[in-house]
Amino acid sequence: MNADSQLLAQLRRIGHPLCSPPAGEAWNQHELDDLVGPQEALCSAAVLLPIVMRNAGPGLILTRRTEGLRHHGGQISFPGGRIEPGDASPLAAALREAHEEIGLDPDLTEALGYLDPLATITGFRVVPVLGILHDVPQLRVDPSEVAEAFEVPLDFVLDPANLQEHAREFRGRMRHYHVIQWQHYDIWGATASMIANLGRRLRGEIA
Image (cartoon, rainbow, N blue to C red; front, side, top):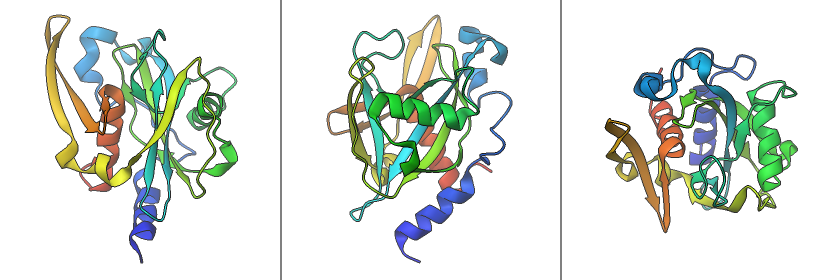
């Protein structure tokens, strides 16, 4: 089994099943109780973690949000957003948002499963969807939401040596958060935490 086949086999094993989105609190809920309140107060959202299988090694698609947005303006994010009443599942929401934001054809994505939900300081409970793209997609960003879409090498962002932990005071106490620096991009906050969660699952650190 080559490296790509081995990675695909691992990715197919580590997620929560698509037929049963993860319920319960976000894995970092206890860290944000004083900021966002109980889970019931959070808005439901979903994002897509699109991994492009390339001969040179898999890449992970990220976006840089348009400046001036109400939530996460200018930050590095995965395509995604609020789960709307018409969405059948977090998967449906993530695929819809990816199509709206970066023009990703839902039919190109092989959805593998859900990662662990994450709470954000902006009041969302985000369910990440792990997806594989076997063909390189032609992307078309919606400039009202996304300034650019780009790829980072998956092996770089999953390497624990490239995952930094920073801290700063926010609303009365020190808050800790992850940062991954790649080229001129600072990948931090919720996006870096979801990447860290993916890495920990791949390394077997989370059951």
